[in-house]
Image (cartoon, rainbow, N blue to C red; front, side, top):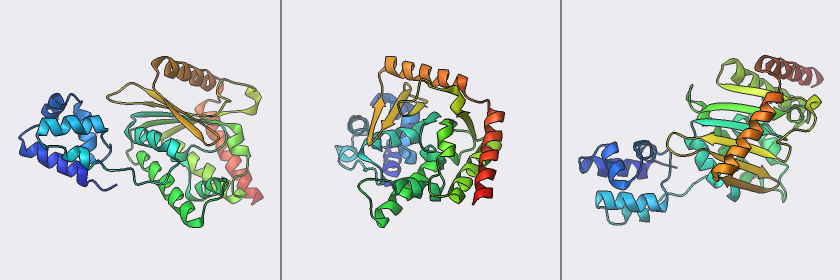
Length: 264
């Protein structure tokens, strides 16, 4: 999305002689929330926009011109996508595929080609672009802090081709070696564990309570119940305690990538 909305908000705030903190106080929001909106990293809710209009005396302009998410994602993932962009900490669990923000272009295309009903080549291109844009959260060398807990099946099941798998796993190796991401593998030998029901993403934020997002077959849900989020965090921690340590996980990733390269 272009940032006309955020730039206009900033211009109105400055014309009113307000700092971000002063506007936040008037609109009953946090300073960081204002900063995210002005920078184009966050789309305000309708209620946020109403309070901002009230604080700035801009009628209903900010409410009327709320930008929409101009991205190609499944309807059930839209809320999670917005949250992913705001998170300061992201902990992913992957049962079937490499987490979206860690996928390479060819791997993402191979995953999306399994959609049913099938999507057109043009739609697949749009979906791939969106998935690669999600990876931009890793451009900042520090935030968000990203951990990925992946089932060994993610590495063993060939998605696309051996060459695609070698490229994808090598990408994970580079992210780990750069210390930008931690990857831990849950080996088959662990047996059953707490997260086998499906994909899970845990997110922490600067200015709101932690949330969780779970996904199954064409179904995804954002969880904001504190009790449920705490329970999912506990399940993640237990599964992580059974995973291979970082060094051993990295060794397995390297060996698996080499095996795919040799087989290609």
